[in-house]
Image 1 (cartoon, rainbow, N blue to C red):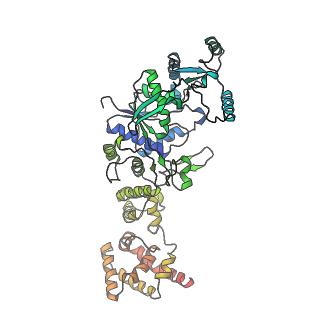
Image 2 (cartoon, rainbow, N blue to C red):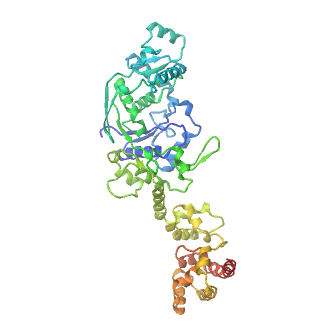
Image 3 (cartoon, one colour):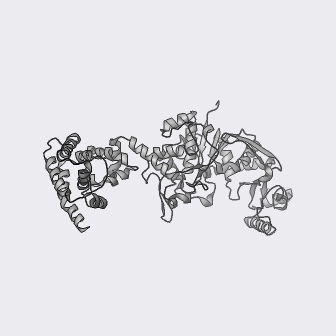
Length: 508
């Protein structure tokens, strides 16, 4: 590519950033980094009615947590700012007027009430999808249907007006999409979209084109939902006489059942997050985020990268640097990608297991009460991480490392605690008391000697042993657990647990 690659992620601050938006940002980021280009964040807040307080900062915080920060844009600065459209308000009107002067757009004085009446009348006549276009514009109040004098009179009187695109009739608009190939749309299927509103704000369409041109955007990588807008955007580029950027429209992310687009409303309703971070509404309602649900940002991003893109082989685990190296828009598919919440958990599990014990101990610390050494917590993490999906699972499943035993697994008590188990446990306690160097190997050796001496199978002794020390019916190696807990704690639990479990067995 001869010119420097410049891509943008341009969300609207109308609520929390959906994971589909994060994926769009990710693909833009990967493409920019792959080609040594710039990744820009632009906030498109021209829809004043849908603006949500706090949404802009949420977008910035989300990208930061995901590790895909822009190198230019809102909150980051750069030579092409401002990067928030409401702060660029004054630059758009001259462009809209230029289109009117060149005959590509026109001034429309129709009020919202008049437009609504027109739609209602059309509906009564059996025309439910009325459009403001080349056929209907002549019967509306605009600079094409009114005399020049009437238009000037209305403007002089300060009458509110919109500027609409003058969509040509029966013209094929063609453009090449990197993902979808050639796209052709006939203008008879398009209406005269508003480009500039009576409020003095541009619509998305005008602002988007002007900003992409003035910010020197080379590639527009965005969601499939913007594909219907692309023909209008192509016409606008041509009307201004500007070079078009290359387009790439990403496939939808589908619900787990494959039935329709995964929406913001699907989140907690279906039992999994759809937002990167927790989002609290103005009414105080909280929607869960991947961060607060215990996901690693790297796992979240890794999962998202494969929702629509594939590397051409069976690899699934990639660092961000590896993604940059392997990514290409040509390997992004056209069809929707089904989201799999269980697979997302699997990704988190892989990242948790590959994280070193010391790093995990730092993450676990806020989830435990009491004072424990870093070495102790790291040792617990090393034992529990193979059985955990989230950081909090280490504490939940390994609670016996941080609290006294308050309950015993009922099923193990009923099935494995036999009449002779108390006596066996007493003998095992006595055998353990003789260990001077308390470590995994020595604990296992004494245990094995005890089994051999008494000709017991593991199933006769092991379940009771685990029950007394951990309160559970399963878990990691008991010899490793005992080594971490220490001799004093293990023997104390075994002695005190005997009476408690016996009592449970008696009352059952």
